[in-house]
Length: 434
Image (cartoon, rainbow, N blue to C red; front, side, top):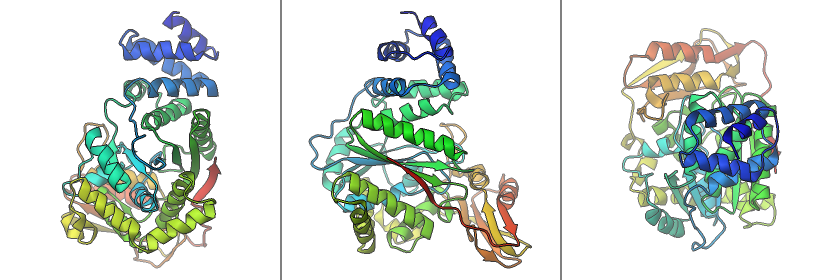
């Protein structure tokens, strides 16, 4: 077969066979197909889409392109949780310890933040000493002992995905739903999971801005899992305003500590418990989802989720005292209050603008090579629906350098909308796809 013929057929909306997709991906991974041809193929997919069979075939090819992590020696059902990314989204650091405390084995394969969305690895690395670069020889024993380990994607896992993503990033094809679905699922399925819970974000601070697109992505990923005999459920959740109050790596770790001690924000607590409950249910530790919710709530209230996270921090070289003493975390040197001159009701807090402002002062990165400042970020003082008086503080910006502070402050001010009439709160969990 010829690469140009396959590009031509996909450009015209035809379905490719599993063998033809294997030829393309394997050929590119082996450097037998040049960048310009794979770029043309990805652009054809962007415009023409892919059938369910094609997406499953692409996922399987990328999953099998490298080493697969064998977890069969570890007793228990292995369940991971993945979020498509949002502003203030620190649920992995809450749901995973709660689920692990309930008996779920959680091999948490996490990523870094890019742009205005925060990455789980970046949050964890704000804890002094915490290692996310575990070798598989370190990862497996920790998983067996603690039922939970956090690790980044290793070069051996789904290397074809890494190569294809680099091309997507430079050819404006990242937003393709079939390519997103296969990218996420190939990395997860290469780690020997039994089940997966997905949190697909939608709204201004999410990758997906429209609920219909979030639904398509969720359905596609759940379908991939089902066809490959994995139990997968997806929540579509609101990301029109930041989740919780804290945005920024060390600031979010502080909020994680508060939440695991049942003193966190209501929205963050609710979503984390629901994700943990679905992990527990998919692990078949309960016979119903309601029973799983009760189990998750109990593991929060009895402090076992909190203790589990501290044990994992210790196991991965970090200082567990940061959960009780926030002064041991990186702390900003300055703070600026954003105050409103108007009274009324908070009608919107644009998550993307808050995320961009936080990234601008050093909490995020524009390229994968950028370094981040773990101490900086934004802490909200209000949420949508709240009544406020004139001169109320809307949020505080925490910074260590003032180079971009004025620009960040302008973005933050623009993020808040005040109305004179009460507003209905948007549902946090919009849909369930299973």
